Length: 62
Picture (tube, rainbow, N blue to C red):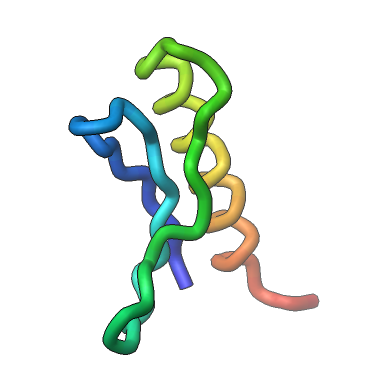
């Protein structure tokens, strides 16, 4: 599973979404970043969370 940041321009919030298939009525939103009123700072935080999660997923087990 991979995560990616998505900006909800209507609400001005960054959301972290997964790339897996969702059943009807489910959502791909994993988290909503609501730390500041600064979209750029929230976007950087969302990208950092996604990058760290994705790098862990790509690391093969020992």
